Picture 1: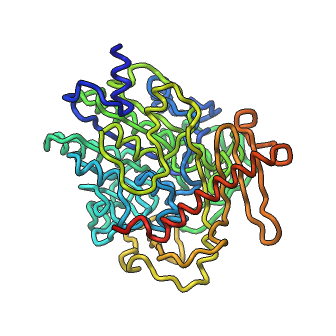
Picture 2: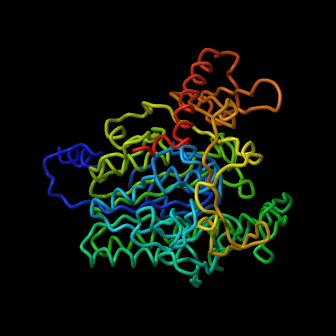
Picture 3: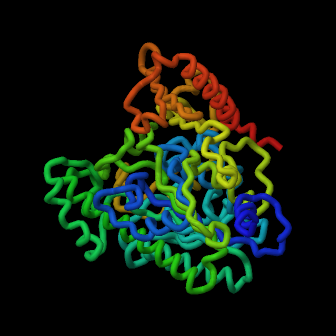
Length: 498
């Protein structure tokens, strides 16, 4: 009975003990960290003892998806509970819009002290930006416009960038701990979003972490992969074994830093009533892809581009290990957090669900489809569109190694959308409903390429069942087209009308 009441509290079901303190919440995300890149998912080399322990003692989400196979769009979904195309966050470097309602804005009004740490990448982090972490509900932030490496440069609360010496994951967790201390001084529950820069390329690692993977260069000497040079900021080709050694060192350092946070929470009596979540923002990047039971990599709409690690720890409410095969995504975070903290949902279309109540009920089949869609941005390049925000306010300030268009900072864009046409429905897209997944890729000429997979029998997406199951495919395509219409209506701004 005691466990049942605890579970009901976790999953947002009202119960009698309303005097219980509000839970603290830490939501973490790795950068380009795919599903297979953990020890607990059977990786042959990676050492992730902390994530493995979380998987063994907390709630392991075995079918957790990024809402998009690339970075900025997934982050927009993480914060808003909505598909990124609803707000014009189509690809990396496209911001979201200031009218969006984030989890931080909701929890801030509920008395939480809210902080963001690390990669932002849904707009500029400077104080004057209308889509900075501060403008979007966070009380304080130590953030970067994009990704970062060793000795990262961050903007504190929108100020000029400063260099923070050290391994970047360790720096972020040290700052997160200071934030938690400030929240305790204020007597408020804390809501922290920690978005690591690891393991996004270019790679670097501490000597002790690199040494753990010294055998890899000799194991994989022949395959060459393309990535950014730490020395020049341009593109180079290097043997994959060398690249994997550095990438895995970053993942191990990130894992250890998560352990530092968990130990701090335990040492200060905070761990029991703190929900700690971890996921990746998309599948493994092509340069780091070694082996996976899933098809595809980052930027592809197959499972390998979308499935990521998904873990939750909350000892007061999850006293025993749980494993769920419910298909969930980053879009589910806002509705789930709102249910846990008993806050009303935003009055606008959401694409996420409160998945915790489903897991509590033993549900392993999602009651609504999951949708994935890479909007055809190329069609916008020839249009004279009105910027959604002043381009000056969209300019980034924090430098990074990778040089793009001759500069070492990143700028953002978003536009008022033109009148809709059938072309707006194009772009790589997929729907997962029940056991089936329909994937659609447009061609320059002729009919689109359609693939239907039975994910229960064929999680590697190797057998196209479209000829045997045309009725299933047609039904899924109809459902997906109707959903796209809803998304395009949001994109046009209808959700922001009072």
